[in-house]
Image 1 (tube, helix red, strand yellow):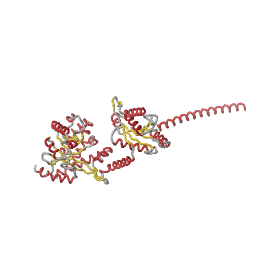
Image 2 (tube, rainbow, N blue to C red):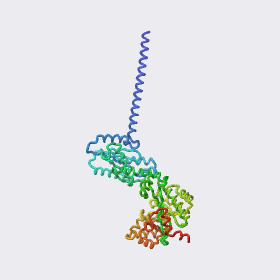
Image 3 (cartoon, helix red, strand yellow):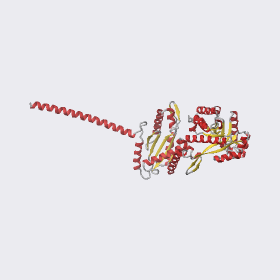
Image 4 (cartoon, rainbow, N blue to C red):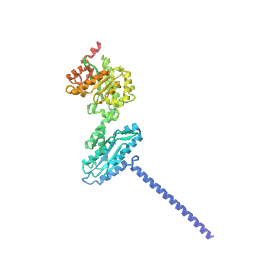
Length: 478
């Protein structure tokens, strides 16, 4: 009996041992799975999912380490790269082609770098390069130019070739920062400045950059509340008929009565307004206020004057533009034919089909369109046959040299001849002296505006101009 019990106990013990062994094997498998999972998660934490390059986390840790061991007298640099107009690729072709472009960019950058460079992608369309062992700044500048050059060859996307440029911001350690956070912030500030100059630019960080960027950001913030605070004001520049020497209209021009900086001209805030999107709101305000003012003048007896209002690119491309203009006309009670809208050549030709359709729809309401800054933007004027504008506004730069420069005189004469053949009126801007007036009268120009007649003036001064010109008496008698 004892023997059987011993044998049974032994069997039970052996079974328990096998179960324990199986359990240990399962634990080992779980441990290996956990280890693989941890390695995978670590990889995800340090690598960019699309390009396989190090990501922001990996780059920042590596940069901090390199800065901590940077020897006295040695320098390293951080280069921020941003693909210009990348959003247009995504919006036009789709995200998949945008991803393909990013992969191609990553491969080209890898080929352009050497063992002293560490490339990462920070997300979106931004790449960052850490360069070590820099001997002198001139050689480093050659490296930057080489990186720019690799983007001169076209990228093939959706069976079409696209030419891509990059903007670059650079910060140098230890001069521009001795830790990763500071150095990256300053490189980003340099990039922001480079993009501010347009596409395909390089900018090295300077201490004054941060101050300028802070000022710019503050101004952008103030722009958002400027309309609510009633800080904008319209000024008016008279348009004069050369034959009758009477005021036949005004161009409305916006000014910003800044609470601390005083009266700001458009070139001091319009670009910022376009960047932030506030330009659309400002544009609507200008249109409404200009039409209100026109109605006041007409109610005072100045019945035959028009108001000209500039449209920004964003405002012109707003799909609700026609409805917005119709609403303003209803609210103010002006006649549509007394409103002239102005766009530049570059805006009109950015999407010629859209421009033709939009201008035609507004023309059917009775509104006239002027093509502003005409004569300097495009070598071919064939598009004028199709664009349903009423007026051409000669670029004011022609007026500055029209008397002394025979080429400019010939160009202006040709433009006037072309306009007449297409049944278009011509308005000359920038008229400042009687010699210019004499030439324009001989050329049978329709209307002029410029400092000879009036600088842009406030509403009160515009009232005085109308009264001084005798428009009320003249118009009342006709």
